[in-house]
Image (cartoon, rainbow, N blue to C red; front, side, top):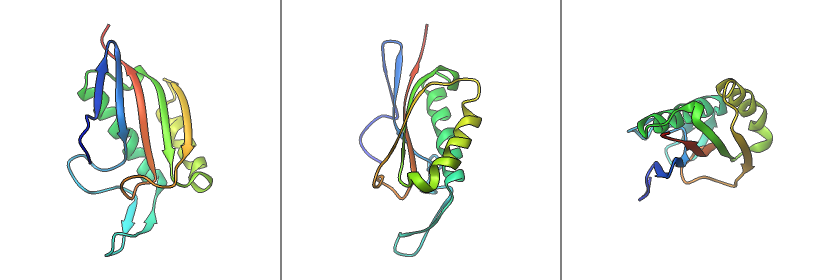
Amino acid sequence: MGSYPHARRVGNLLFLSGIGPRVRGTENIPGVETDTEGVVIARDIEAQCRSAFDNVRLVLEDAGSSWDRLVDVTVFLTHMKEDFETYNRIYAEYFRDNQPCRTTVEVKSLPTPIAIELKCIATIGE
């Protein structure tokens, strides 16, 4: 999407850039249906949450960390009232064993037609 890394290590901390639900290496966004003009006409927050969480896991593992080493998660939602309950339920599934600090905020929009993005900090190394 831009000129930045998916993850950057500083000491024993790994900082992840905003990670959304787009399928790695494609333009496909699970849970998003657009019209011919690119306007979102249907969205499935559950599919987007699961894909975004899976993408975070992939970036963590690619960088030498893991899901259980997450210590802080900031979640951006574009439709807090409509999506929070579903997002919170799925979050609880994924973070059953590891419970990092969490902040969830509503934003007006994100750079692509997605409804969720995560910014994370994890530990890495010794």
